[in-house]
Length: 314
Image 1 (spheres, one colour):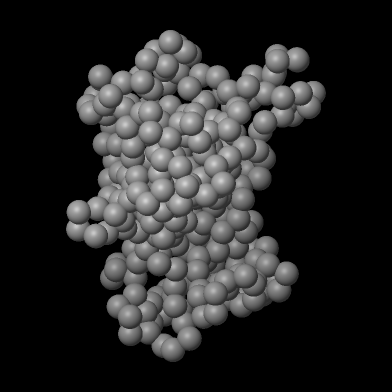
Image 2: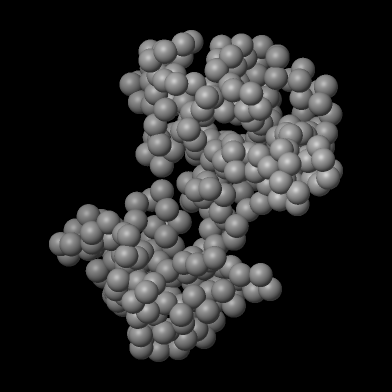
């Protein structure tokens, strides 16, 4: 197997995927079928978009990678089987067993593990495993949403290891898409701008974010979202990092934005509240010693990494 062409270290959960995706092999259906049957292959089942997890030797949860042949009989007709990639140990696949009634308590997986929400599980996993599960969840979610052709409405069929669906009637080809989202921390002197969405948990403030629109650059999206949601005008934009976010398949593009002033005009349709918060308060909050009723997202979110990176600079 060829070596990975790059090695990037990211602080963001769901980044740092260790697999060689071997995209040049996806069109070879015979190769995919052989790899799926090899004893070294690992399979991760998903039930209703939740990954299988087992208890490790230390009592902590771990990704429930299985050997082939254990639970494929739980897959319903047309359920997706996705080739995720490979490493030196073998190939990785994801399968959808959502057709099963209660796999935690019935059938071949009964008593072996659970199907937790990926958000909570990811915080317990090694970075590489969390990234693999995020890739798998996004792909299975895409297949569930694209069973019919967008051009003619006919049923589509999986091909190329799960990275294409083909229409048997009009022959249209459909490929997975990633939705880009700009998430930005605006700064002014020693303060950063944090906002509360209307659906946020009580007391949580975060960086502002919004989908990038067609024909728009990242910088333009950052400036537009800050102005639309908080009335803040931007002097400059600086990239920080990205995070795959599998709900359902987004790429969070993290940026810092230098504001022209600290003037705020909140769009109450978008935000419940927005405020400038000084660096001392943010540092105390990250240390668990912040003001009562004020907190920021956990490290699972790229917003946390943006806030922390800014707070840790002098």
